[in-house]
Length: 329
Image 1 (cartoon, rainbow, N blue to C red):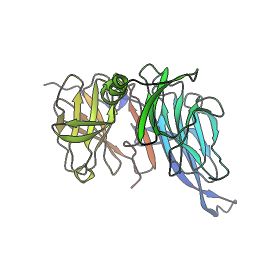
Image 2: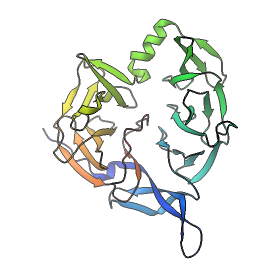
Image 3: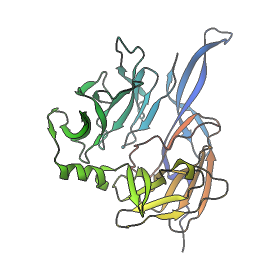
Image 4: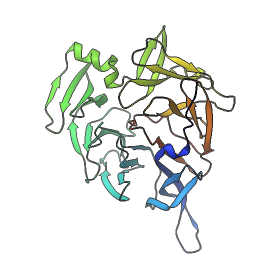
């Protein structure tokens, strides 16, 4: 089979989050427990940060807790210990979404938000609490947030049309599913049939699957929900687990054996033609694998950045989990 060489020119949006010490004077005396964050674009061809394209510099006590690219690749979302921002990538403008403060919980933050499929909204919860919290809605280019649900929300997600959010609340010993419409805020309880759809229909990107009696986590879906990547739910199997890909019209997934230099492999993106997968190893090694021939190509190693977000140029893949985080060695 003839395989088209992918080439590094097929990469489009790459955002690197680089930690740097904060300094208090011209002698560059490091301030203890303070860290600046620099947001750069990453030059995949030259395998280095494009320092001429710094999107933002956040000075002071900053560390990233959650971050993702919008589906349209125009926005970058980053949450720190207390503040949450979005960066408009084409203009490099920074927008503060706000700080989540409560008298009894100082320093609480908005830290886990999920993009809507049309990139218009972010929905999520604050972090750091032992119990589950209210559901909030943010708009990437505006300050502040709106409380959608004032209840004990256990889980949530977007409907495929981006016009509604489903969520789960605990009522006594039972869990109940609801749907809230955006932006009206009208809420309704879901029928058992609709709950079944959310739990199993690929359009809702269910997070777990049982295949041949084994449990898997579904940590990646293509934008059209026609292909997904799986990993064993048993953490003991993940170090050497192959890349596991399943098409929507296939009952069973396909396994792509790993090269010996790759461990803890996660699929970060799939090309629009569904021929190539971008794979990140636990050490921050980026590679491409051809899904039909299992041919691997090494790209680069993220040895100079803390975190990286990278997409294939022909992909409109939606960011949905933190599994594709590449930690600095």
